[in-house]
View 1 (cartoon, rainbow, N blue to C red):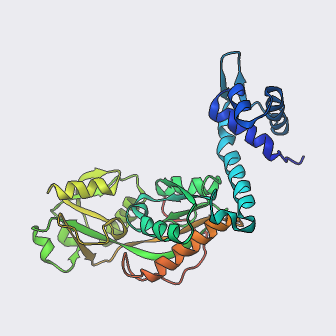
View 2: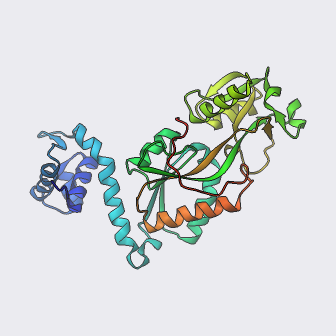
View 3: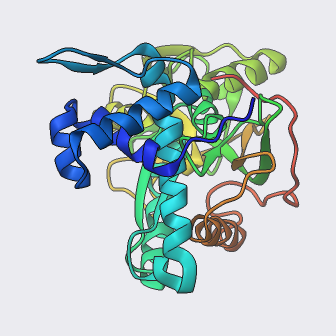
Length: 320
């Protein structure tokens, strides 16, 4: 059976979902309440499931309704963007880009690219889902994000991963620390120091632990944090040395800590763009994606080593 819900039915569902009221939703959509109810009922008939639990005083989405909400919202936003783009309307207003981005890429690099994009194309809004690697992959796969910035290969067959560059793990330490005077530090030289690292459950930590186990290096992780900015705060307080991706460090020198390469071996993660296989980006999202690729190409070696030639792959990566 073909399932073809009307865009008006999806709008009606989202209005009720957001306002938790058929009366308020009908006012917001300038529809009579019976007309709005018919649209929701039509959608329920197409899906073969109830989307809302209704009473005289209470409206709440069912589990099915909550499950469909992200996809329905995505469909309506894509439709609106497509309409706005006719004749270049998205250049003026209304277009929106939704991006699932690992937090380490969102701290310093991403704001610079967004600033440049805004100068080129004002009026486009952004929603940034700063999520863990696996959560970001799932957001892209479910259609909640146009695309993602991630450091793992696509772990699902319906995703494509385009590598952009290699992002090295580096050391952050206080400017007065003995290691701050070194140009580079070997991993074994960190043995015995109190180190600050991200949680064992994170993709960054799993990648790092696997590489260090192979190199037979044992480190003392005195602190484990969920976010690298917390690690930098502990470093600034003099509580330990942080091991983190270079992309998570400030692009300019800090008076509170210094950043040094860690070698023997050099350990890095591959950062790239994750997209749905066969998906179609809105014109605004496509332009922003292309700008990201160009900016990373221009910044080769600034965070991380030069990228290998970008290529598409669906090989499994590191779980987060």
